[in-house]
Image (cartoon, rainbow over all chains, first blue to last red; front, side, top):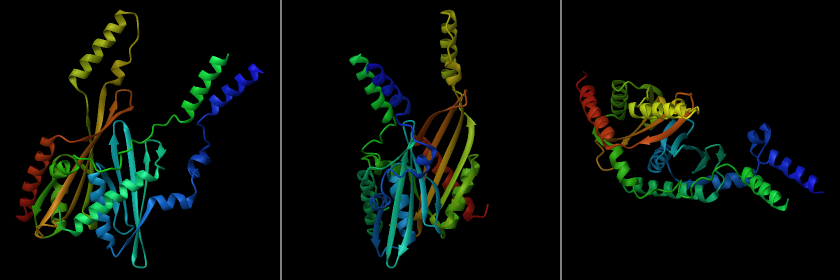
Length: 138
Length: 183
């Protein structure tokens, strides 16, 4: 019995944390709706270019360096070096009637960022940046 | 046996969650943010934003950077350059460690961990000043990635030396003047 439990533990040790390539590609640990809801915020009556500029400002205030931006697609990609780990974030915008949907997703090192509080922090910073832009502060 | 089982269980748990967790404040604006923004930004007087973007791109070329990305509608220019990263002190230290290890009959890989090459990245963002509409605010940020002699990425860091930004903006003010005078 002891041998069996030892073998089981060793097997568990061998496979612990191992996911197949398909699992890594699909990353379906969380539900799609849950993920979208924590990564997306809706803004009323905000110009898309103004929003993209606010996103860039926010990312820079959060110590990110902007890697890429596309005004047509409405996307911004940036990275932040934290010790020896890279936090990479991409933000996309899309219009829906009079609203603008902003979605952010990030990865920390080789892990996706799945904590809703972190996204809440990002959107709080974005709100602040939009406020400063509206009230004419450089 | 019980002890061994519990040790293995702990290792299992450790491996299952082996990836590091992002710090709680990774997406929070820090207290130094405003100070850093001021260090990284300068207002430049110009009639058009494209002139400021063009002047910034020219400064980057003056500094030996090659352009990787640009999006004029958002005032973005991203550039990089690859340079030697060897530091004499680090090299001498590693040589000494290797020598001492050899004396003690051991083999050291200290020399292979010495910095060898670096990629310096610059990201420039321009936008019309909210205070003075005749000016554009240029914000520059620099990063570097360092590889060691074994070819492994050993360090990534954001560069925040005051002199670096002063030097860049000094060159930019000259470049903006050249652009205006068509030099």
